[in-house]
Length: 171
Image (cartoon, rainbow, N blue to C red):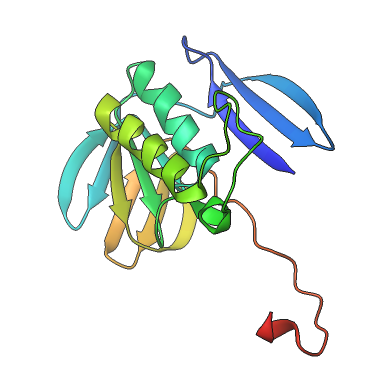
């Protein structure tokens, strides 16, 4: 099961692709309220103008960043650990479009990150400790300071579900 989120080139629509059981479902939703261009971010006291903050640098977050920067938005991606998410634990990715032969998860992540950086996305490695909206502005507290933004995409992915059975931690 996988999810991908991406913006239309004109930034008017957010598309969600859901893949499961050899089927792909695509949903289209107006992006009104999801993206608001030219907003201010404060990070460690420095003021930077950004169009979009994406929380999470897995495939969905990096795909969103690629579409956002191609649409002309100044984009930053916030990631707690390393870019890639769960796909880093995958040895052979065989169901990703554009790859005839299986690709290693880490190689796919490197290519995604290189593409996002080449297009102008910025990556910040820090942990978001809280997110709240106040007077139309999102306030993101991080382990390194505060960020303010008028638009946020949350693409934090998922975790493997634990069964809670004896021996599970060893495997």
